[in-house]
Image 1: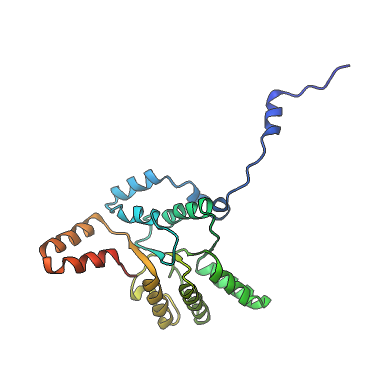
Image 2: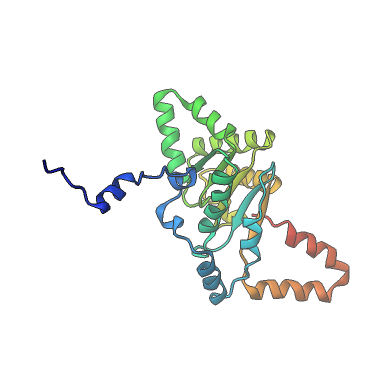
Length: 231
């Protein structure tokens, strides 16, 4: 009797079980999963950017104070935030909801149609982490702005952190909302309850240092300003 034979490679392949994806792998865009921190740092140096902001973001610890990264497009704000989220999701096992303007508007409309708005908002308020990618990327309608302000206020009152990236600051953020007063109110809340990390060029950092050195009377004020940025 001739027994059927199976090659060793086929046996090995059959024994290899597919690994379940981690929470971070399920949520993080494929492009950002391939981020090489060393390559990113080298690219920032070549473009003349200081790296302090990157280290500060990755050192952020979960707590009531959220985190906002403000800086020009193309410097890697979202990539670095996703590197931080890898620790928060996979090592610390935090729950998270990820949003942008399109996703928020779409989900809000679907929830309104299905009668699940309260459930949707409750999820945004109660999750460990609420991450908004590219805040101000596009205009939000009046109703969407009101709902976002409500979520920001509820999370702030509950001491639940918000993470966000944005390329805008000051009135630039306000202008991205259909009702500028809503944008101003949201920005005020974020400044109050989040640590704002600004991506600066080396030249900007040097200028800050020179100003501080030339004005002893203003040294402490400048030091506080550099540690407590605003959007």
